[in-house]
Image 1 (cartoon, rainbow over the protein chains, first blue to last red):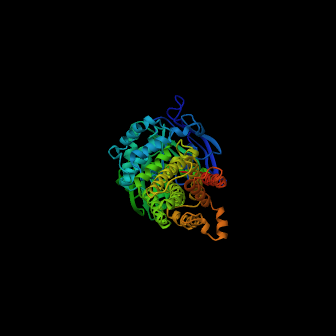
Image 2: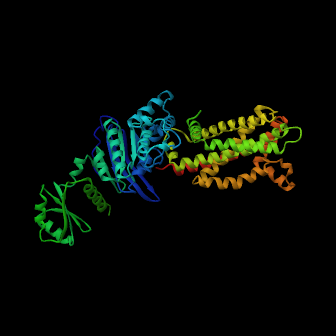
Image 3: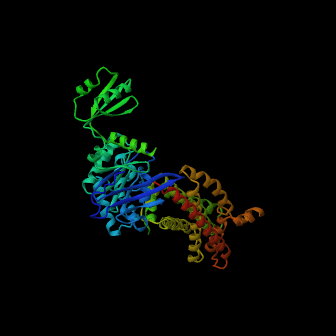
Length: 316
Length: 249
């Protein structure tokens, strides 16, 4: 795990500070010393496969679950000290009252979060504008499209002006168009300075939206940083991905050329220390049983695989 | 009024279907039974007798008991309960908000039932305060039972209607909702003293139709108070268990 502090740590209280969080279910540790911070204005991506403990971390942060050890504080407040007021959660599912209008949904949740009566309507209007539903304020939720449901779902999370907005797997199960719309909305929120904790197992989502990324493995962070820092985990200019009938001979040739590589099934990913044209890579591996060859930049997917594989090896 | 009560009433207003049935069913039952039991001297006495039991059995039973179950099941189906749990709203506020909403609905139904009875010569003869206490205790009892079943057993809206009809309608019949309980065979008459609907009906009928006072209905009130407290306790426990189950994203 990296020990870098959040950008604003030390100067100001981080919006979210998770420290050495531990919890086990039926003797199986789910969180095992999870530590990270989210500074004001950040979009922090918490990455991990299903069952990695992302949602458990959110449940503890919101006070829905008690940790065995450690703490999760929002603006310095523990869940029992009023932290819940500072958190807006957008769950995976659409959680709206279909037989109420958009405005009525927002007014209800503003009231449930104890927003002062005289400010509720103003807050609701601003949130509707923020998600571009200002002209649908008086429409019943049941009459809205799926994309509009998603946007209103986010607006409800914002209505009480939380310091931290938690988006739990915001695009899981969405088609490409809906996912793109969700990304645009998150990007808009990021530009307005909303502090966001985003959990996802879509790597491209984290790469596109997050200012910093934490990768979970084994109940803790296996790596953390901005995308540029994480790229340093794989010291390669580019990656050559070679599918071959006999991956072993690709591995031997890569070793001969002094390249690092990783093998998964019939695919060998070769770490190219400098940029090379596709033809040059093809020449390097000429005469072998290559079925396909491509050259691609180092992405979060490879970093993620590398980090979680290393973490897995360490855990063993 | 609490935000929860407002929200439930607004939803009902927008859907209207439940509201229509909660008005239409007791109105039709009151008209039918009021006219069936009318004698040659007019409909006044029969509507005096039927208004209280129709309010308790045909109106409040379906609105406050089935309605509460529907509200809870709906919250779970729409995932909104989790969102409410994540707000500053306490479990007690949520619970009391539902009780308040159904008290408002009960008041509306009482106005409609007695309005129809009035049009046919029926009158309310007793203490308004005592009648209100009986109605509130009845609403509490129904809401408690509704919470118990809604939080513990009902998984979907479709699961609600069958059991409520299968168990509830016999209780209404035995409780004297549609005919005087002294028409029951003696063994059923004795057994129905354990039926809370019987005590609701008898208490309100004695106050409303005969002008009985506190002392005359004390036994019914005591039974109702104990039953309402027990059902609210059971409902609260089931509700707390449900909250603990639902409190995960």
